[in-house]
Image: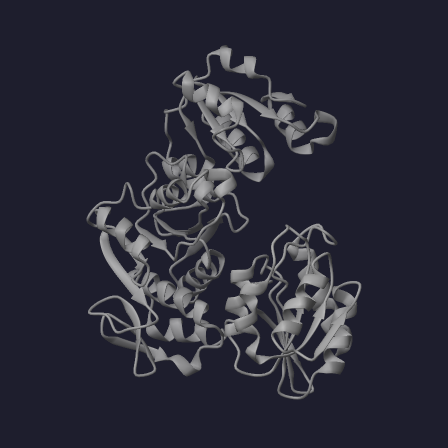
Length: 450
């Protein structure tokens, strides 16, 4: 960890806690700042705030009083989930108070270089693949960011020989004025988080922050098949490393004659990759590019891709029972994710789907149902799912109360050689606290079948 005096005796407000807020407040306190933490949750229900109070950090809980901004703060570190139209953030900007996220702090103190991954889809899988490839390749990686580990805590233990592999959301990237990864990856861009950013343009601008501080000795790995992504690449000072699942490139990562290829070098045969799906091939190619740029051997890459069965809840292979393969894709909380999951298989599919009703219909899924032989629905959208299933010609359609009951029924409806796929196309909150809980119930039900 670098010893910096940037925040010594500075008055800093940490707005919003959760993991990143706790990490930021603790680090700033350690760096000699006068830290005030403000969180909306009452102190009596806020063990994180209680812990900071015991460290000697000033804590204000239960509300976000706008008059706090009159106390002379020189910096605000905000929770990424707090939007910029929040009155406290708007007020800070109007007063000329800089606003950053905890990732910026992590970068400022880190002795290790960063490999940073962002994009609408594929971030977690790509981040995990890179981490595993570097780990098997003995490159001493650490994993951080939106994947669940607090970047500023990881950066405190990182040394020069480490590589910090970090997944970043658009929310985090909006508060990174100096963050400069040695390798940056932009997997893809689709419409998302417009309730936060307001417009697609603002969302794209936020994602572009991943490369804004890169120099000509850095690398920017980009999806060559997306015009928006390539437009961002045109503005970057880094060395551009493209990837494509659709065509051979003059450089970068692509598939040629059945081989995953990087800069003309054959890395491994595509048929030896365990992780299914065209969308996952994008993630694989970008991960291979990052691994090769980091000096990882082809053998290490092969060993990871030949064994990697998916990130938990993201098209995760659970196991096989009597010739039926079970996949947990509970993270598929929208239509696009389920379309990608269905496209990953050529075998007959028994699809488990449904969940929170956000008011949308599911007609977009109909072309993707060509391999679906049966559907088991649950949750608020069960009736909507059944309507599109009927219109697509699926004959076997069944409704159950929950995911736990869906699994044994799906097994009864299946034959040897089929795929039983949980890919809900909906959020979980009508029945389950998180998509992780929903996925864990699916996994448990599969194990009971065994």
